[in-house]
Image (cartoon, rainbow, N blue to C red; front, top):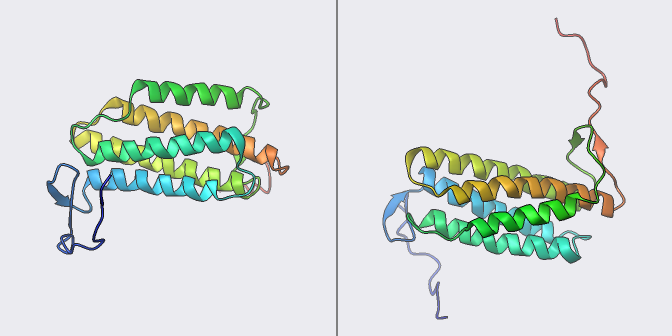
Amino acid sequence: MGNRLSRIYTKTGDDGTTGLGDGTRTPKDSARVTAYGTVDELNSAIGVLLACQGVTGEVRDTLTQVQHDLFDLGGELCIPGMAMIADDDVSRLETMLDRFNADLPVLKEFILPGGGMAAAQCHVARTVCRRAERCVVTLARAETVRPQALHYLNRLSDLLFVLARVLARAGGHGEVLWQHERHRKPVK
């Protein structure tokens, strides 16, 4: 592979536009740029999660594969008409989700984001994933987006929730359950 970025700054975006993967120019605040930019932000949030202590073994391998998938998804969103995320990618997430969830106790209450640094960062990644999904929904209202992109993000947010539970337990912190009765004042 040759040099992809021989010069980092080009000055072509100084007018508030950016180049899509197919060479067309679009405003930097367009729905498409917002969608793939938020997927990039999600990938970075997962990178921070991977830098946390306690993210090892199968969880690390899973998240690293997800980062590769998100790079592909960003490419798909950056190049109108491109197809990079497949049904098999969504199925793989579902398999991982089932495997990680199998050993967790049934959840009967909501949990608060936390449970140690790795679990907390996983919750941050989950919320960024939900935002990325909303951005792709917004894009899909205006332009064609393959359903696999939405399916992938939807399953990924579920997987990140389950991984946050796994990490909280593995780190010895456990899960903090929401106490809905705590310090409630009557609404007038």
